[in-house]
Length: 271
Image 1 (tube, helix red, strand yellow):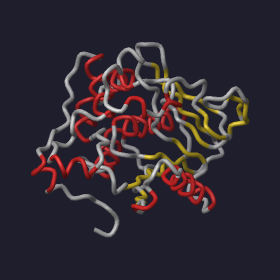
Image 2 (tube, rainbow, N blue to C red):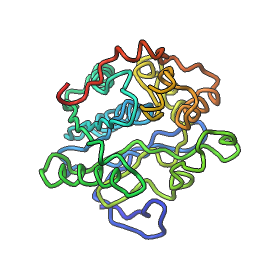
Image 3 (spheres, rainbow, N blue to C red):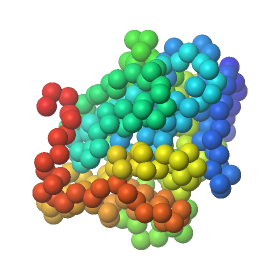
Image 4 (tube, rainbow, N blue to C red):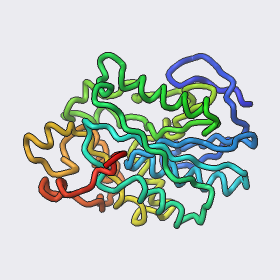
């Protein structure tokens, strides 16, 4: 075990890991991948966005670098209030397998969040995720869990962004990647500019970026105004744009018109 600070808290905790592999961006910030020889499998929440796709790739490379016998269990949640993933998480998983030659990436587990559990003001959405990960631990499916949360862009960059006052403020500044003794946010010291920088440094920009979508506009708004997807104006689209512009590169993921978007399969369980 290693002793580390808990994210957004001055407390120390014993983390159920014994190795940390760092991937450093040009800014000096690093994605830190904790690993352990005792693990059978690490679960990674793969949403279809830039951050989790990169995390899947870097975790795979870290396991190969350390020559560890650890499987990766991708975990995806389809949320009925969100837009459909333009590029399915399955496509991202397959692409990372092909790029790395890894045979230890399992097929993704897909969970469908009930509409009544998507609310945030009463904590139901957070509770769904907590219970989902807890059940995976209790069943022995995973030994540790990663999510792709990143640090928010600087305040001066976010001026004028839609709903910035409702952003996840815990992501403004984190003192550690560790949220519990058995879970981590390896990108927590990185903002979106650093994420794009690592895509470029590892020469996977053109391979993975086209499969990703960061838009988090509510599905009812998309339908009411017949928006393109990604919408290009929600907080998450602004954050994504910041990452590309800071690195002076264009976003090469597709933009679908509303009518094109309606034809995209949702890939939800049971459909």
